[in-house]
Length: 430
Image (cartoon, rainbow, N blue to C red; front, side, top):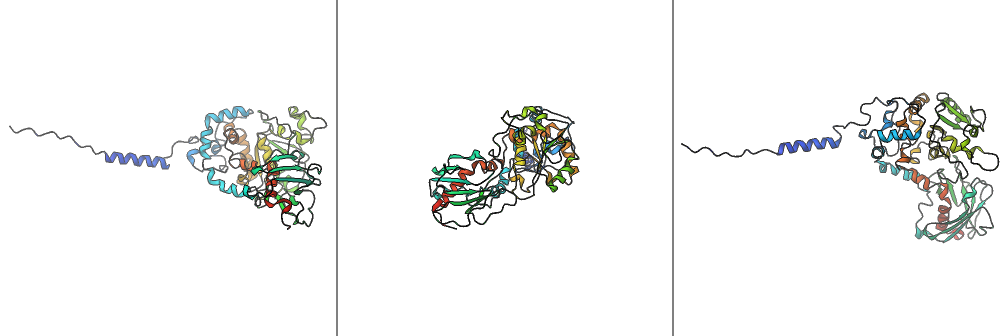
């Protein structure tokens, strides 16, 4: 009998399945096969996604704001309960992933918020004097709280005061409500002029100009604490539902009032102040919210309890006097500090100054009716509403940190550093 044939083990071709697996993995990573998102089973959002600095546009990171109005309606009042619902549905890791490309948009903010073209960060080797005195001249709204002695960068000490007895031989004179001298000779103080109004007009006689724009010698934002040091900062955890929007204005400007009246007619609101008042008078906030009293002596002023009153509302209407690049005023920052969501009409580059997903940019809506519909839907969507507060709770500040850094709070040191850089009294005449 012939010998039986030898059994040769069958060779298994591993190459094909390995290539197939690699191809599948590549497709998954590339997003070709999109994984289910938090809103995959939800309806189309009520309005276009509100853009924010750092948004990636990647639908794999859809969050609650991409589907406002698609969840079960809830006329909630507790912000803490809304936060808990958002934590369970979305959470900080997901919102951080969504804003993960914030570095790609920071270049825009760096251009908008430089601290000023003259200051520019002032390197230590540029400092020419180690001590600078600034005397604030004439009437000004600049708060007394800024008066004091400062230890600045690079070993520069700084004294800032409105009193000549404190700064008797100043290196710089700061003017805000008055025009600087038309001439300056070497050996005399540098002339500094500050104008944070929308028009931002240098006098032509200053050596250093301070404004709100990055092109000015020194840039100052409205985001600091120095504007308001004596207020009640009680922030309510409960929001009213009978009135969704807080609005207060006592400087009645026709264009702004017309816009406010048209929009507020579409949404339940309380209007304080002298313009469009609907609460029975301009001083009703403390009657409605006695907890907001700061227990100070003397008659209360509206600004003493502004933040506290705002905090009882889900939204605050913030309309700038004019729509000007980089002119982002306290109206917006007050609302953020009060734990409310601003509805903003103003600077076209507002996202260069505020946290991502922290405000409703009215310019992104086709009409006031569309905006009003979005606001009312958001007011009944605690998960989506809570996402407007995620920047604070999850530590996603974006450009806001730099905005705070360049506020009035830091002006004394930054001005003293620039005066030192220029040489103070020894600077050549201009």
